[in-house]
Amino acid sequence: QVQLVESGGGSVQAGGSLRLSCVASGYAASRNFIAWFRQAPGKEREGVAAITTRGVGTYYADSVKGRFTISLDNAKNTVYLQMHSLKPEDTAMYYCAAGWTYSGTWSRDSEYNYWGQGTQVTVSS
Image (cartoon, rainbow, N blue to C red; front, side, top):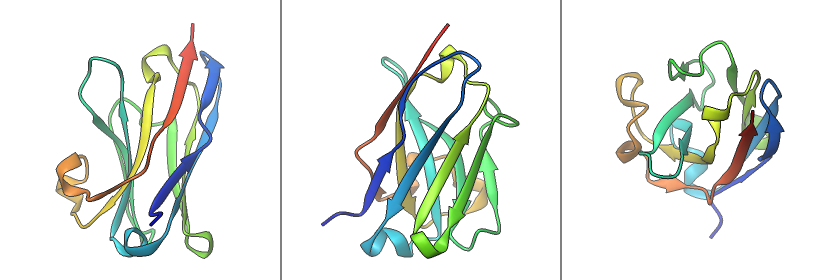
């Protein structure tokens, strides 16, 4: 049963842009938060950005503020992550996740019980 499907990853040079998409279905679509996490080889998974499914709240990791924008299209059950000014340190597998959480805990991966398969983002210098 498909719940979250990501797309849009790829390889870009530093300074470039990418837009990731996450289509939610089933129970995943009914969670109150949808977030993007990323994990680079040898590093812990980290929360990048999150949005409430009512679209009233957005949250960002300090490392991406001002460069990434998360948005929601309720009609399409799709969450987007627009990434600008990409840096080599943004290279990672990016995952979409859905769950019930709160503004103070949005970046904890344990708060999310639905995960996509991931999409790779590679930024070269």
